[in-house]
Amino acid sequence: MKKVLLAYAAGGLGAVLSSLVIWLFGQYGINQSLGVAIAPSLTGHWLYPRIVWGGLWGFLFLLPWLSGKTLSRGLLLSLFPTAVQLLVIYPYHSYQGIAGLELGLLTPVLVLFFNAIWGVVTSIALKVA
Image (cartoon, rainbow, N blue to C red; front, top):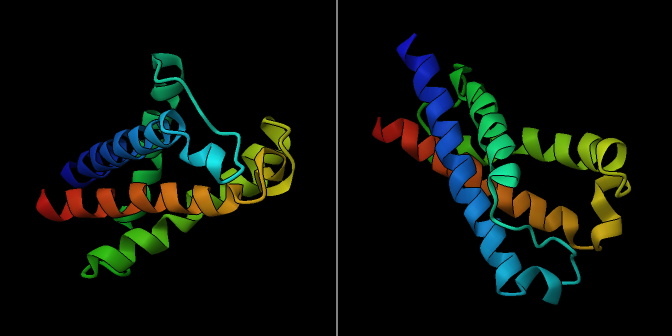
C-alpha cells in the first residue's frame, strides 16, 4: 500500500511542477513565441485536474520494469500521458485537432517536453522517497 500512495503522491508532485512550468511558459510568452496558443491561468480549476491525473499516471511507476534507471524510466513513462493528450484529449475533448495542431505546429513538442518534466520529477521523487 505504501508504494501505491507514494506513486500517487510523486505523480501529483510531478504534475504540480510540470503545471508551473506550463504556466510560466505561458506567462513569459515562450509558448506564443513558438507559435503555440497555450497560456493557462494558474487557477484551481485548471490545476486540480492536472494534479489528480498526474497522480493517477504515477501508478505507471508501479510497473516493475526499468526500476533502477531514474531518468530513462521517467522519460519513457512520460510518453503514455503524452500519447493520450495528443491522440485523445486534444482531438476528442478539446477539439484542437490531432496532436493539438490547431494550437500550433509545435504543440506536440511542447506537450512532450512538459510531460517529460512530469515523468522525471515523478521518478526522482520516488527514488528519494
